[in-house]
Image (cartoon, rainbow, N blue to C red; front, side):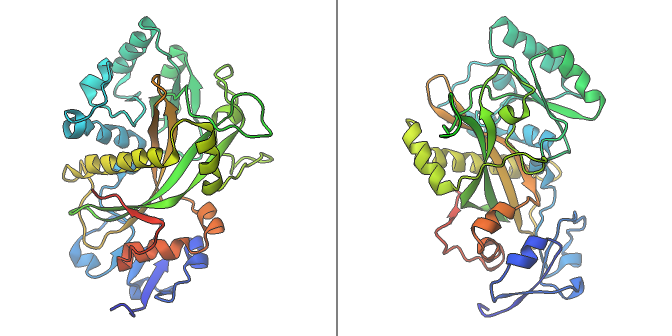
Length: 358
């Protein structure tokens, strides 16, 4: 029924503020809800429990949202795409593990320390840049992250908490900013992904992305300079936050780089489709589970790397559950109306929403 008014229970303050479409009614009683959109983890996905209720989570979606499991999931890429891919990587790690070209080489420092040590030595022997970024498996907002090219330091960092180590993108695509001299600043990009079902895969991307910028010109000389190498400034006191909307960015990008943004965008969307294929090819607990009640919103963070042939390669950094969508809501007040209409009413008539299922 196109005129049906859906009762929505949520603990997201932004949804309470920006979900204004007349087809949705916000309620405080969870037992009366048609839709539950919550930050809390849902554990029971049985039909007997959910019945006709719609929820914003899929069973075992942590194969994407957990940094360690994301890297393991992506290693299925070779079996799915390796034989048909035109990308040839003369790298022993990629050949043996099936690591895709769109994910930085990643090791778990608890379970794969010997393999990391061997690969670190391989890079040393072949004079390959050996700079790595060490991340906690669970924390967000750039907390407890280190960038280093020192093996002794890397192997000590997991003593505080479980860590993964990823090849640092030492040659990122930069954006020249008028008020900053030299070669430009590092940036990353966040897209919103909307998942309606697993079988068949129904995956959509919101074309309106947002950007985060470093505050200093990029250089590999000082790896501990936060404002050179990190882009998340929202949670730091007295730190400048540079904001450029995506339309302005696209114009600047097309003026400064040899490839047009439209070609990069297609590469990014292909990357999203491939990681979701990797995440759904296996049954739970190794893959995302199918559930008729499930819908989901994820934020995918990525960076662009300039390869030796001057081709730009998107690199997936992480996929986030329950992301902070403040920037999207501030710039586009109808954002959550669009999201809910795609996820819960199956309305894909907005030009900002692109079907990337196949």
